[in-house]
Length: 150
Image (cartoon, rainbow, N blue to C red; front, top):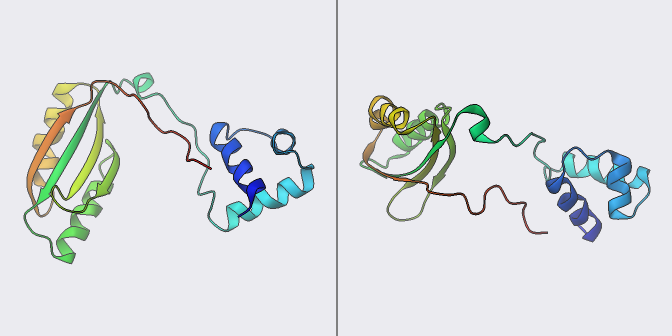
């Protein structure tokens, strides 16, 4: 990956709807080489997907919690079952396995505190292998979904 590829990635992270012509102008290449580079970045997995970033509040998702999960059992089968179950919960925006304690961090959105309480009582508390959940409410987004540095 060279500097031009990095410029292409930087521009697309800022605006994924750029046309090839606009992208070529911004990275100071002609359209054909820009298009070839873009296709190669898609083929080699540097560009994983294109999507719209939706404001959660537009969907009524006004509450966000960070949930720290400590596992009681950590054998391979239990961890895989836990991760598969978490991946099926639509309210989970982010799930990361951590080193040390806690074992996982979940970023969860719901409509309000009552909806989060129901989700925790009915779904999160019964996840495979889980020993303890510790939740904290998000007060304010300071940095969210920032483009990767180039």
